[in-house]
Length: 411
Image (cartoon, rainbow, N blue to C red; front, top):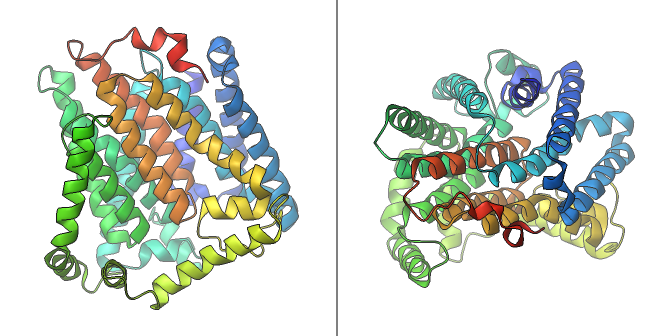
């Protein structure tokens, strides 16, 4: 019960805009995250003893984030790092949850989905009136405060929707039609997926759109992810899309005309033709990537220890620029080693989902600042989906004893 309340506090903070900016509630969430980690480790310490590289990298990232926040803006800067710190804790526990035979937070996950649907519908309705509302929320202004008071989400909510799309699609495609619970969950997953797609489309964050589209393409292609036939089908599909890009882009421009995504579709179209790198959107993003890269090259060992001089448009590049090569590697290990461990541990039936969400998270972190909502969506709901597929398909290649073998889950 205590763990469920802790998880709910974290999710509510990430998803409700009015609470995300509340300073006092941040401390509540920090305490909730600490209690959750402590109780999980105390409940089964053997699960966490062997996770050496994960624990070391998370510890290093924690120290670096506190240090970097303090260098930037004193203790106020440390408070701004809380979201990322909690996201790291979620990834650490989520990794272990994905490798358990049973998921412990079923009804909590359903409640979080309900909260997300409520905020997503509120935000989408507002975007129908003002298509720049999701971008206005992230700015420090009176208008942003008004929108947050109306439960209109922005960056964190949109990237949560983008990151949860592959998991929802996976559940929609893989859950059997037998049994009331499976049918109900499949309806919930499919409807939430459609709401997520609508939100991502209307919010106007181009990277979120690209990441969710590519991750869903990985899931939509039949076959197992680790088979040559699958990769051949993926390459053929991408090639067909590239050959047919002109009518696809024409349709995309028609759908987004008058909205915040229209200029981004134009930019992507020009870049697909190996042109248009001088337009304002693409040029500005590349300039920020270059800025982070140059900052890293100026001080590759210790970094700048500050966000000053970084492009602030790529978590990967910014981590190397701010914390040097070792700090950057610690951040990458903390983010992606848990996903690799899950991929190695889960049954073949679930490997494609892990690969899809890993690709989505990689695009989020590589091409933009990683939103805390992305890690919540991946490490809370991917284990949920894995457990549901495992329980509903006992006669497939899913083997509940597969996870017991230590040589598979060795970290």
